[in-house]
Amino acid sequence: MVALQGYGWLPDQRRRSRDGVVQARVLGQRAVGLCGPDAARFFYDENNVTRRTAIPEPVQSTLFGHGAVHTLDGEAHRVRKTMFMTLLTGPGVAGLVEQAEAAWDDAVASWSPGQRVVLFDEASRVITRAVCRWAGLPLEDTEVPEVAARLVALVDGFATAGPRHWRARRARAGLERRIAKLIDQVRSGAAAAPPESALATIAEHRDASGEPLDSRVAAVEVLNVIRPTVAVCWFVAYSAHAMHLWPEHREALQARRPGYAEAFTHEVRRFYPFAPFIGGRAVRDLTWQGQPIPSGTLVLLDLYGQNHDNLLWPDPYRFAPERFLDRHIGAYDLVPQGGGDPRTGHRCPGEQITIALLEALVPRLADLDYDVPAQDLEISLQRVPARPASGVVIVPATTPSTAADQPPARQGTRSR
Image 1 (cartoon, helix red, strand yellow):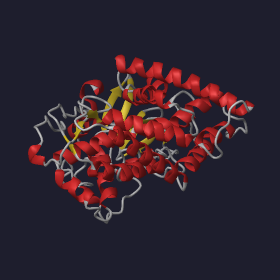
Image 2 (tube, rainbow, N blue to C red; image 1 turned 180 degrees about the vertical axis):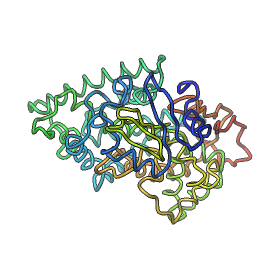
Image 3 (cartoon, rainbow, N blue to C red; image 1 turned 135 degrees about the horizontal axis):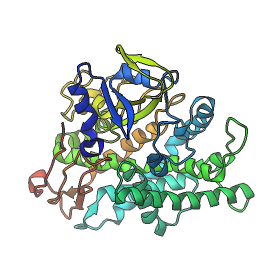
């Protein structure tokens, strides 16, 4: 049923339950589904839930990689996570944003008037070029399209048993081999890594045991810097989708309203589907709202449901960036990439990068003069991860265009 209903499965199950707590079986395992800020706080408490044994092998072999930080708990997780926080927060983020802005401007300058541009694909290549340069990975311009496609495949294939999944496995195997070889060369002195780059930091890192990472695990963690950064292409495509459907928000971005790019970024991340839920395992016998959760039970936190909860977000299926103007966002409220404190818990440490990249690229996108040809812009909530069917095709205009000049497009997101 999860595979058939996609993002709607857990919210539907919660609506049918008496108290919003789901009792179900997932992959033959007993599972309980929770939702809301209090549930997120409960989920991210390591005294309650562990991630180490809860990530299925297909997800490890595609999205995260075996031995990744996501599979650790306790002191091992904290030491590894500190490394990621050093790389993915603070002053280093500005360097990545500068690389992305330069790569975006170069890409736009290469587009010809009248040329069809698939924005999802183009954004993936722009961000791949930027993050690989920033991370210290040597990458020729001619290699960018293939590497970008492989990085996208890692994200696109984790939640399906079909061809997308096997494409993701093949992509991971090839990328891990390439980066592990580079790690060995950096450690032997045969290759140089820019100081303080992701490549240098991970090659030099010592885990809680005091030992350096195995070169393959080091490659996994390099990919866990690069892969989620390239996944921002999903949000770039979603941003274009929103600007096309609701052009008043594009106008506000063009006008550079104070705080609006940040608010728009948060609303894109809240409104559009990304991760449906995340899972952990009860470390002991627990209770939640009076319901028992035996030790070992799979605990699911409904991310999509929480981001569309009308108690947290009035009129949740309306795209409204203004809801984030002057609003403090609690650590357990907006959870497209998980909740809690990224410094100590399992919340994605790259969330700051996601926000910074979108705040930089979305206004640039809003400023472009382009047409939106007829295409399938529908977003199916049965596909995980979801994306606009067409990838959002734009055509750089030869002359200034208006919304009235643009041909119709199939539009919309199947919302529940």
